[in-house]
Image 1 (spheres, rainbow, N blue to C red):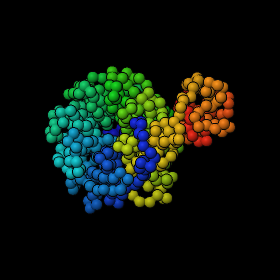
Image 2 (tube, rainbow, N blue to C red):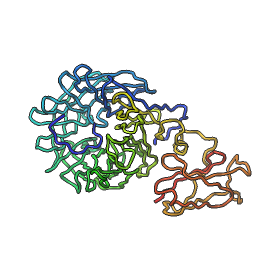
Image 3 (cartoon, helix red, strand yellow):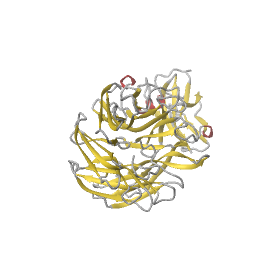
Image 4 (cartoon, rainbow, N blue to C red):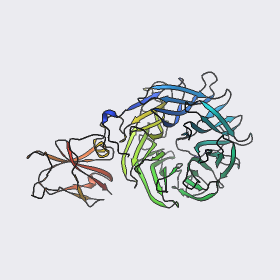
Length: 521
């Protein structure tokens, strides 16, 4: 593609909604654009439709083009478009590279190969995804690649990427006016290699940039973020990582003025020099100091967070990738998409794994995620049928999920009851008292009474009916169930559960009457 020296860029190619399950739409669909190899990296909610940006090839020349798929709210194809001039190869940027603009149109940050070098490129589209104009930035001497763009408050644009102007990769930041004319550009880096992969606007008019670095930090490549002012001057920078190769940072400013970072932490090397990693999310305050730093899910090859978004209630949804086992490298093992929701404090609410192709060696990549107008989630990526049991070509992949991350109705009754998706015959009239909480070995659940010594005591409960305490993990799977008679307390062996966040529900004949949360350390 270019002369740039590349370091590892991982996967580069709750609101509470009171709606019934019948109003939720679910689909898990694969889209063949031109019967050639296609990718997808970004999705945008556009009214009742979803736009998906990716790449395809010209059916005559095989030149790489930018591809735009429009699907309706139930997953049917509305339109397919591709853009590109003959003899040139175009690249559509990374996750989140397609954005909405203030005038109702769209913009895309990416790049184009011109001869032996790459130039950064900015596309402007109207509301129908017809091209208004395009601009390129660069020279014929050295390469630069655009990965993502954002529209600025003055209606201009900022583009982040990389350049090899100094010999090694450095982070590139470009600022344009509203018509895409260059206002300024600047680079950031040290003696090693830096990748700038994500950029977002800050309340003070500056920018927060995410990527990774070999110049700074403690490892082979560390997660790296930069905070700049409105004209690109560095105000502070941070590195996070291990002694191994760590992922790039997707970073955004949060509603409290701090920052949220989605990345990974490489933990150890397997035989054959393959690194395992865990999904990692870091919360910073406004000055860049760490508020919390948490790992999620099992360690897998090439596992990490690719994009993360804050919801209106302060919680976060994120999308990422992992393999299905403990060490098979991509291309030789089943690759799966992951979607996760965490609280504002970093507690894992649910963590789910998704696939479209089921063959042993096929690949399923989810690269972007957005909340939808019906309270659900849409996620986009692509699939590669690398196993004989899966047919066809490499295709775009789009999933529509509910707010619990379910790909079908009723996959997680605990989450659905907690977020108000599923209506129940009785509202839970109490919060269960659980102590200690967090617990490391044993926890006690207090069963309230009605003040007259009768347990449990709930309206419409018939004498002699059985009561059960059910415990669910963050995926919605019931892991334990206890019969509750008239005892005042129930003791739980938390060592049998394992570390994590659990949801407890007290039920009578399947009806939820009380609930609580338990953290096991």
